[in-house]
Image (tube, rainbow, N blue to C red; front, top):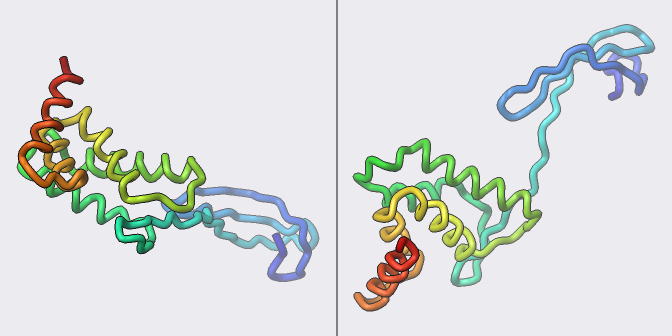
Length: 151
């Protein structure tokens, strides 16, 4: 790190403190002895979401949260904290896969996997939008598949 006083490139870290989105470091220049502070920020590559119609958008946690909120409406089994955890797990998995683009269908599938283990009613509500059931027959097939998996 370049010293802001003398321009020397060699310094030592005296103290490091992580904050929510960055790391604060106190440094000491090994040439002039002056101390200075630097802030390091984690650089993340944005995840691009490919929608059904082919358009692309930047990944937005709030869109998933809105969908989960509707699916979990009046369901006491799932709290806001649970919904945030689901979204965080999905986002971390996507980032760890090093994919820069992901289809909405992949995100929806991942949400359904998480919901199925927590609350079946919320799962069915979310699936009704995600899978775009057009009639009662396709809806009943999903319910039959769920019942078969549970047995």
